[in-house]
Image 1 (cartoon, rainbow, N blue to C red):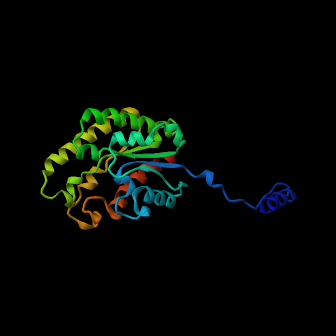
Image 2 (cartoon, one colour; image 1 turned 90 degrees about the vertical axis):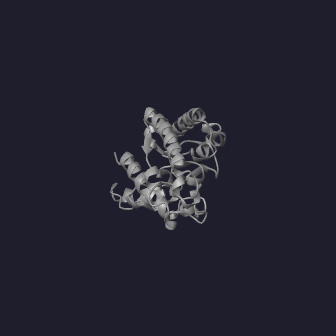
Image 3 (tube, rainbow, N blue to C red; image 1 turned 60 degrees about the horizontal axis):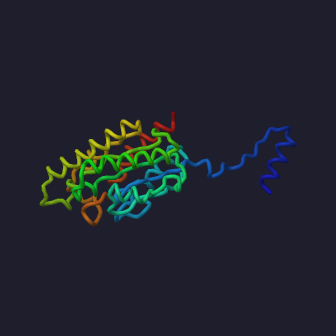
Length: 227
């Protein structure tokens, strides 16, 4: 009935319509978040995970983006994320894709060659799901879990060096594909003893730490979609 009224009103006023219908939800950017426990938001409420905080942040800046579709599981390595993806076409297409994967490869001491091969396959799938536009894919560096209280008593220098090695791999592949690369590792190394920055397991990021991540991620997404 409202649509009919607006049409008649515009017709009567010789096409000068002053009754605007709300935009359909289909105008929202579709967002896919791919990864592991860092993307799921282990031990924080769903709305405090970084994909959900990112949506809130972008909306506050005038970017209309839908609730995220999360393709992630606690503990996933690159091979497990690949299995979760399966045929990329089955997931449809998205306007924004974030990708964060590899910490469990490092933790379980999987080979760098395997990570390089599988990360390349995952990134290619992400680009395909981003409508073949690598500029709409945002790869996030692996945080350093050695900076958390959980790692107390371990060889922190070794963990940091190995995380850096994995990040050199994913950064090189991302740059070659011309997707966006966002370094979060430095943030994860900020005052790792601060209990406010981790959850109750003393390992995974708190909502506060995720907020720091989102500040960096949202800035890059806004640049891309404000062009």
